[in-house]
Picture (cartoon, rainbow, N blue to C red):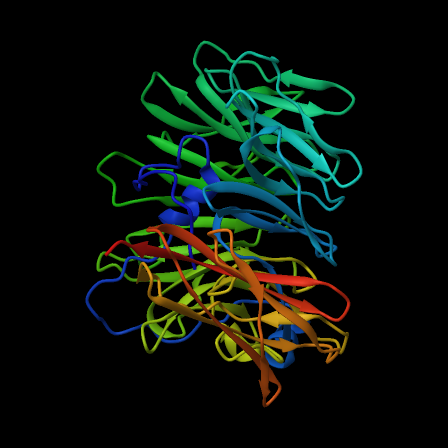
Length: 510
């Protein structure tokens, strides 16, 4: 899996304007010397339906897009997906409507970041406009992309989150003031008291509670909560040097991560409510722990870290407290998403030391998603599961790009395409041999495979071979000039639908 890095990431906080991607990069495992793994998952209370799901469900794979992941993908209750990918130096936002993937466009520049998706299919995010300025937007299939910057022509703005009522939160201006936006009221400045500087709204719930981060006295980063009734309130009653919200519960609870002091061992998860204030959730048996996701009903998923570099996927509920979820036989695992049925997804190391996507439930334990695929090319590998909805549909990254896993209910599906296999570097004039394998999920057959070499040349595969239900196509090409090229294969079915996989190739001079 490839993740686009905007710049270096430290363990002291998110990137200045891409916090969701930064959190993902922070929580990729740190692998060190081998140590004995903990035993498999401690039991966590869960729905029996979830246990049956994990034991008996197979998945069909839908290719979403090739490239490097630029922001966290989001999947909503109906199974639509919003995501951003980097290809050829451009960052493009996409929307999968349940049937097809389409780009969502831009505000005139070359970068669009889809940051959040609601159940109505509306996307909140940030796009670079024609003047090269980052600008907040809200997008829908019917209305397209709407510029929602607070001060046209004056500074930057960022759209971070959208709820199911279509309300967006984010920040605007050089001081990064937090805002609330709706189609009826437009942009509302949440207000900055003298104690606060550079705040930003990050997450919100359907009731309208917004949580974000502020900088106090140019030194301490604190979590805040905002409602119309209370205004902007510092919710860090534990006096952390840093605290950041990750999710808001249906009842106005805020979950996130805090750093108790600058010389502390690392992040600690917290849960805040008006009744209890900020409560430290502990670090289990580790030296640090963190929240990555939370359901509206307060089921938390994340990780626990140890001083020797091991990590363990973590689940927390009020009933069970904090629990480790084990691994797939290796040293590390991290939970990335959780749904209302108690199913958790993430990534874990297997016995061979390779990272694999997993799904976990109380009854089924941790399962390698690669072993649950139905009719997938043998070359396809799922390495990270990133999001899951209440229907059990999972968004994951793979060696063929971003994919959607749908529980197999016997419905027809199109192609599942594996990675494009080719050398990553080759000399000018030498033949580059590339291949791609795929499966016709609905057995309607393949019309063609088209190759594009990134230097302006292209062509169709002369021959498509099939063996054991898996088809493949091969091609060869020589480059006449050094440079970096994106080689792509488009597999087209008999109904004209195309699935693209790609790989970047460096061509060196003599």
